[in-house]
Image (cartoon, rainbow, N blue to C red; front, side, top):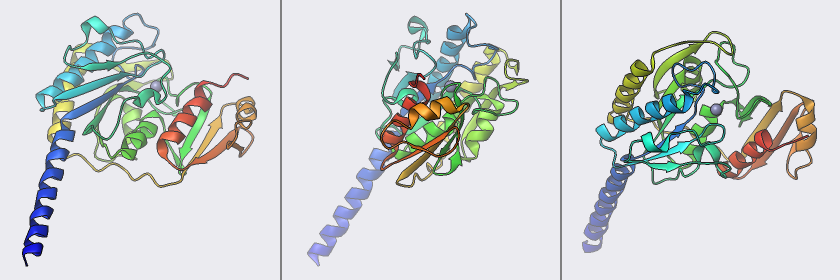
Length: 287
Ligand SMILES: [Zn+2]
């Protein structure tokens, strides 16, 4: 009898501490910031790029703190991963900067976080009407994870899902948002621009985009976060290149199989290993 009461009490205590840790996790926010989906840019070589990117990231940070976040970590996730203007960044955040890093656009994310925000995201490779649409680099035609075609948003959302962390918010071009919603239906999205063709956009002004992002992040973090998608194991990856030459080089890597004229595939027991190898395959092959 006593044992039963004790077990019940312990059970309740466990539940209470789980609830507490879930609450604490929710207050830690991770931001992955890209540049193609930043408002008012029709080229990532635009000298205003770092400035506008920093301001949109600051808007997301402000939204997160307004919604009760106590820790915000920002990962600069575009190109050189050294774009954000350090002296203009909200001083409350921790910045992850520079490249290379093993987990690229999601470096530093782990299960201690409660929510992920994507800022400045773009559509996946070969998306008609996506501005600067690509997946990882210009050599990828398509990336399929466990049979599902994903762009950077999807690939990164699955990385977060592996650690049990939901993606709460995305800003960027219209298609980036639509494509992520196929995988994360409840994600709050702010479309700040729409591709006309690959190098032209219809866009919000920087000020309007920043205000919308701040409001969107606040709404997302105050609302109910959707459960992250399930990542089944083993993780099967198929990477289709734009030309065969990359597949010819990639198939020399142990574990990587040629699966078609310009397609390779591999399987890993866990998602972080898959993510790391995907990055090698799209970023570090030089035929
Ligand atoms: Zn990108």
